[in-house]
Amino acid sequence: MVVKKFYGNNTREALRQVRDALGPDALILSNRQVPGGGIEIMAVADTDVAQLTSGPGQLAPATPQDRTAQVHAPQADAALQAREPDWPQVTRRRGREPSPALDREEPFLISHSAPPRAAPPPAPKRYVAPEWLDNHEVTPESVEAPPASAPAASARPDPAQEDVLNEVRMLRALLEGQLAGFAWGEFSQKHPERLDALRQMLAAGFSPRLARELMEPLPPGLNGSQINKWLRQSLQQQLQVSTAADELVDRGGVLALVGPTGVGKTTTVAKLAARYTLKYGAQHVALISTDSYRIGAHDQLRIYGKILNVPVYSVKDEDDLQLTLADLTNRHLILIDTVGMSQRDQRLVEQIAMLSGQGERIQRLLLMAANTQAGTLDDVVRRYSGEHAHGLIGCVLTKIDESLSLGASLDAILRYRLPLHYVTNGQRVPEDLHLPNPLYLIDRAFKNQADSDTFALRQEEYPLYMAAQPSNHQAMPAAPAPATAPAAPMTPLAQVLRSNRKGPSLG
Image (cartoon, rainbow, N blue to C red; front, side, top):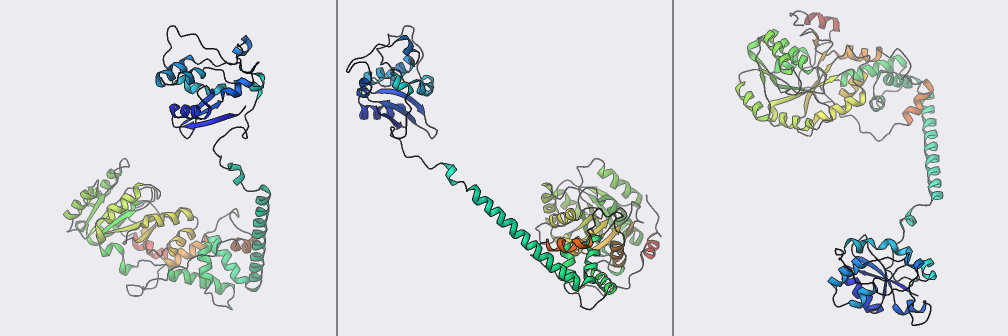
């Protein structure tokens, strides 16, 4: 007996194929919906089934045991008779019993059947499913079906081949690490002073990238103290700072202080306003707040404005900001306190677009907390710079009194070539706002090391650490030519503090 499969878009089309191939008396074994759409019918010719019965050309009555394996489908017969009035014999044959192994294929027809009748007609005689058919397993050789695609398992890589590739990768990484370690070991033997200077830079919090770039032009023949002095001078020369002759508030304009939450934007706005008021008076400065998210943000700035006798305005959107700026054209300095948000916040793009929509009139000043991790500082600078042409005009380094080391913050400022306009070391207004002293900042970065050796590398670990760092880095951009005259010799921080304590404290 040959069991055949027939595929059609619907039941009518599949039954037509059965009738054309096997005749109107074909026995329907099963039918089901295929996942891709359409109907699949398994059928066998009437002559093949007749040969398996008790006598050739005779029909054997169904025994009670055989009836348990039959699938009664009078409802399906009624539905098919209503759809196919021209095929009485085909629909009558569909009531014959299939094998129990194919019994699960019938629910499709039952779900599409017509409502049951009150008195269904007696079922026609059915073929007896022989024991051979009950135990028969349809094989691919006996079923005519479309060619199936190759199983997905054959596309899987060989596990043995994967093991070999993993071992090759491991050996390659091990060999590269050993070769790099040998190279750095030879370097440390030839240049122990340079290795000591590298250790100091890494311990101070500077990145390996900046350390490599500073070590490349190092002149040969210097001893340890000379190398350390050369590094400090190089850092001092590359650090762009504002001086008393070119202070940011003296230039005037519209300054928008931006940065993450908690870096001290509102307090720094008050410090800058107080610093300007002590020099030029309150009639030439105004404050604007765009922080509509934080509770009490406007109240804090209004208190500072009331003490300084400086007007404070609140804006909600770009149009409101534009109208407010148009009313303040007679003010020499306008300070904007923006809402603090994470550098990964979706609203940051909207904030940058709002401030950049006014053209070059609004200058964005980034506030960076010195007690922030190096990787976070790098991410803050990149995301707050934005894609607009104007970018940032510089930064203010806050909370240097809360940071153990200034190496990480100075590293980000140096790598992104950000001019450093001010530093803050407390909450007092305006005493704790100072012009930056590069000599003091760099000296403190090297001196204030961690008290414990938790994050310190051992002497023999530096070659391996540097060898593991990626070498495909870009060099730092050259420092731009100064736009002002050479700065006067830097004064010690104590003199800067004494000069800034002349004004009254607001805090």
